[in-house]
Image: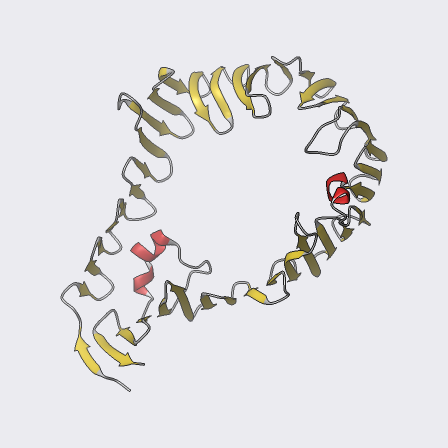
Length: 377
């Protein structure tokens, strides 16, 4: 039953203007929340130490030791900035440029790209830095660890404890593996694509026909065997990606693409089920369960999604609970839930009703706060 009826608060005018603690919005032109400001989002967004315009112009202020680090980018043509260690840098793509860190490359340098490229990548296992140089990328390249390639004719690549080679890529590839800790042990592999391939390693054997469509893989885990747990398994693909069956020490899985999939993840410590997911119609219907088989989340994209702390019935209703407080609203037209920038700048235009439920009461708002009331529990 209604306990009170209030007119709109002075801090909200329809969907256009709203003001509350640490939040202001003049929709759809401007909004500010915390350290983020939007102007005609997604046209312009600024944060404490960065801003971007149309995802093309970007500025980032880096808090280095001297307070001088920054970066400006006009994608994909121009960038410039200053790095605490490398100093000033700039680039006009594809003429010439030098950048201390972009994507997965460090100390990148290019000239008349793809004519000349040089960059470094870290090797986490040893702490070393590998330098790669390329001429007419990716045709000719060589690396400081002895790897080199004249693609697609012939190439050699050293990776951790293994050496990979190819000839007339991808027709002939082969590799030799030293004993390691994290992957499948010593051994070798080879493939003559698209006819046949073979992997023979200490903890894995695999036979492939018409790769990647048909394959049989056997695996074993000495670490699990030493603890008396299930340590052997296999995987069948026949043909990939339409049918896969796997029963392994850390996962059981069956997939009939795109109709059905069931995957069970197992614990490293006990070998028992930790979680599972069942899918129908690829990812249209998904059911997530915990190790006891109890449902944690159900999704029917984009119409239905239900978890322990939220419920979404698209495009009508959405409820999200956190720390004992549940926020609900009607309507919710965006298929993906709770996108902060959309909530700040656009969602109010179609959110006709909102409520916030506390342990003892629920606060309601209809037509952007024009009508408000409370109900007691």
